Amino acid sequence: MFNYAKIRNKVTTDILEIIFKAQASHLGSALSCVDILIVLYFRILKINPHQPLAGNRDRFILSKGHAIAALDAVLAERGFFDKKLLKEYCTDGSKLLGHAHYNSVPGIEVSSGSLGHGLSIANGMALAAKRDKKKYRIFVLLSDGECDEGSTWEAILFASHHKLDNLVVIIDYNGWQALGRIKEVLNLEPFTKKWRDFGWSVKEVDGHNSYDIYSALRNIPFQKNKPSVLIAHTIKAKGIPSLEDKLESHYRLPTPEEYNKLINDLK
Amino acid sequence: MRSAFVTTLIERAKQDKDIYLLTGDLGFSVFERFKEEFPTRFIDCGVAEQNMIGVAVGLALSGKKVIVYSIIPFITMRCFEQIRNDICLHNLDIKIVGVGGGFSYGAQGPTHHALEDLAIMRPLPNIQILCPVDSIEAKLATQEMLKIKGPFYLRLEKEGEENIYSKEFRFKIGKANMIKSGKDITIIGLGSILNNAILAAQKIEEKYHISIRIISMTTLKPLDNNIILKAARETKAIFTIEEHSMVGGLGSAVADILAEAKSDVYFKKIAVPDRFVEQAGSQNYLRDKNGLSVQTIQNIIAKIWKSTTNIK
Image (cartoon, rainbow over the protein chains, first blue to last red):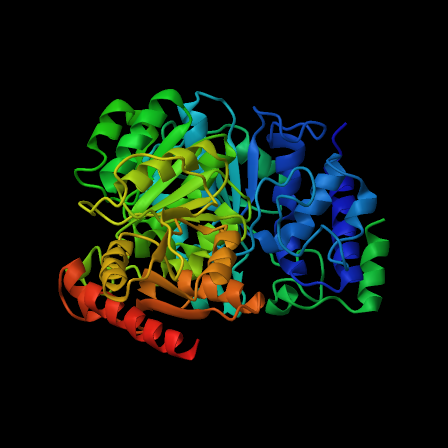
């Protein structure tokens, strides 16, 4: 039986362990999208971990490539690759890099890391599926900060113009970008209205409520002939009391004491 | 060059159903026939080059062979990071086709001049770069490029370039084409500006009774090192000519090879000075104003030939 809490604890433990071991960054970004990724990989995406390149698979693009620790942990938990490999994350000589890389482990479709690239690539995949009359869908996870990029808005225009209703964007809207709160650095609001005005079908959800995420994504498209966007309201560094909803979580790690306590609590 | 490219592309697209053509809202009176014959495989992406490259990448990851087209600064510089991260890093079957090499869009001003494109495209891993001299090479280069998987940059000019070749020949990517043999001096060039060098060479040959070797370096990357080193051994001076900045193009590539080989051949780049060209003018006018006229090329080569032969 699908035990969400159990999977979530395991994945969160892995994310914490690998980032802490490598003394890497972007812990906050990984934890704000962990629920979205688990729901996608365990409930929504039509994928087979043993045939990661099957022609009819659903495609997922992590456009916010800096959250790769979360995707690596979810892919390992889902059985795409051995957890022993996961432990190498961001250590010298490892294939598991600090940003998504297509050649690193099975299940990663494209390399990302520079923001504002993923949605355009998803557009091309969605268009190819339409032209080839294939049923698979394309899911893309964008960060909120990534919506500063002009290229993201070029891609938003393209998707609705071409009626790519096999395309689903999920926004990890944790309200922070690298140097401050979104509303203070470069405001995106009214965000829902912007997407709607650009011709997308929009839903909003609590990005940490797995049932709500699942319900929202269960039926694609949200509306025929329109691309779908799910704006997921999330909390940066969700689950780490000292870093939750703080800018520092983009860069810093919990203290060793807090780390040990967190790992124990997740057991 | 442009019609040679599009005619060749259409022929190929008839056989290969995976060929897609994407344009950044440019190509009036160029792509009408392609669009008519293959309406579902022609996509005008609008004035949005970054997204266009991404769309090409998504299509290529889905098994398509994609051509992306625009004027050179827009298809190389505007979306350079997409070319680097998305096309080249993933090593995809995408052909970047730029129109307007050098001063082809002369009167349109520096925003439309293509003088730094080779310098920025050369360092990209996995990419191959083709710069035809005339419509015959443009046709052959297009044919060969479409047979090979992987990223390419095809640098076209526009229309009406004088043909250097009288007929088609065996064209191979990565191998330079010897236009004319010669034993005293070598001129290596790319693009239709090589015509000016050919004319200058004829005059020098007559005046000084020498013979000049002329090479079209159609493939800038991978560079045909052997033909360069052979010229360094067999002739006394090498000149490169290109309608591109002095910085980072063919001349720089050849200089790298000669320096590392510790060659003592006399070497000189003929190219556009490192500056913006803020004057209107036809392609020929701007060539003349930027050191690429037949007369200037002739003067440069003659001066060096005289000094070289005095030393020897």
